[in-house]
Image (cartoon, rainbow, N blue to C red):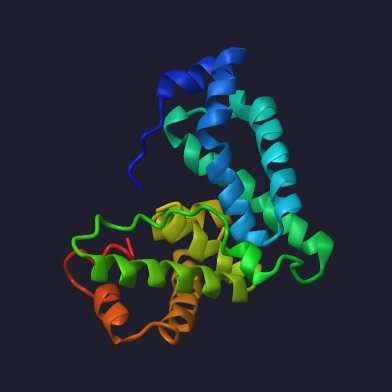
Length: 202
């Protein structure tokens, strides 16, 4: 994942600059919310995770020695809080699929050249969301981190405290679940050697 972190902003927050913290919160709150919601599938829990995540950011950011790795550190906090929530709740998600599909997500869809191509990609996006909705938190987490947040296998392994092999296995199984839902044209797009970063391992 190519980092676009504003190192100076992170350093300002580490120095307890309140305006810098508000800016940081504004920049990342929606992405953290989206990540939490895609894993937990519950609006209220996701909102709670956002608050808890940024509380930890405020309290612990001074311990981050390398500001360049802020995003990896941020999502590690988010994922850990989500998985803790799953263990505590021990229940099925309460949100309906219809509500789930309303969340604003961005799976790095390419600029569409034709209405037909755009329709194919939009349908792919919907099916990815449906796939995530059907997965357990363990598998949904790697799918969300990879395709929603654009983290590499290595980065996901670091975020989730897993081996790269375990991450690849979970991603492979989640991908196989997804492939069952895609039509022929969508599979061709997914497996293209060029322009296929939509669903390729990085």
